[in-house]
Length: 423
Ligand SMILES: Cc1ncc(COP(=O)(O)O)c(C=O)c1O
Image (cartoon, rainbow, N blue to C red; front, side, top):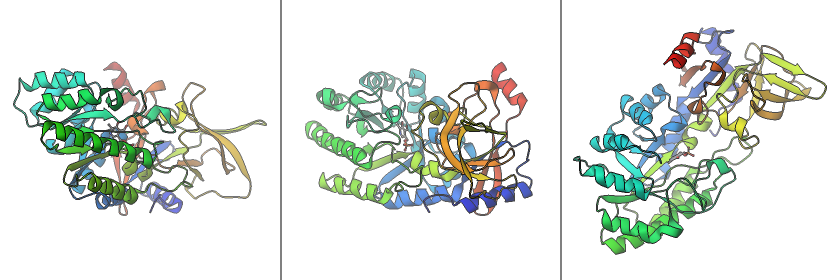
């Protein structure tokens, strides 16, 4: 299954209203997440990659604790990119050996913390490597340390999420600093692997594979120079997914097969592979339902005012036209609306700025106040970017596992907003 079917969405909504999980009138927006869908993606990932791969999921894509806690049972790890995410990982029960720590801004304290817990660290720069070298003197540690390389394979179709162009704020640029990268491995015997991440959505599988091949060639050069084998390659995440449902869904098996081919070609089938997928695992596993508060029908334009905008859909609002979700409309009882007559609507949020528009010119059946708009594929990189602008309350979040529904995060209350702003 590549996407959650619309009938299932309608049925889930109706069931949750009937069971009282959804309180109409109060729950103006709901986030739904389907754990079985996630499990099927995790299983596909495991089947596609070599057995000696450590899969981790990027916490930033979806930091909901209840989901992290359930992910542990699927036997994969997590990628953390801040002290907060390290804390979430440990509190959710991930063993330090299943945590990979990335970030371009690690403080000395954060590095010491990770070293003291033997957590894998990928250094983002030579400057960070130097810091790690100093801090390793102070502490006994068995943390694996990798160096993030920017393989400079070019920009994808979404600039804001392309991180392996000629310039990137991440990683050491391979073209200009190949010699120095190799020398770092000579200098630091504890440096045992390489890390890359090409981008998140918008970068083709071809680009990801070019980056991987660059890294394999670099590894061979390093190994020849230092006369020891490197222990791991962390390939990051970045496999694109389909939001408009017309594109081909991501081809995890093709990607895994190509990775294995390249490992064979460069005689590195034995090396430990690490992955850090976020979007591939989460994006299609969730959806959002928001009530139409007003259906504005004017001569020149139609606008649906719903209860989420740039607070939940930061990228969609700030980079219009780049994140093309699919939408369907449910009536006030949760039945899928159809009908011959359709109108084009702008989908606008509740925030006080003109750019608070999730999508434009979306063709839908005629909408009325009290209908519910379903926004597909919101399981990753939506609530993880939640913004407190205009002090809106975070929506209730419902997890579906099999035929069971449970609230995994309650709707925020005005008091929660007060405590956020009062500290
Ligand atoms: C270092 C790193 N790893 C993994 C990911 C996850 O990428 P994706 O969600 O596209 O798989 C990101 C996302 O930005 C990242 O920065």
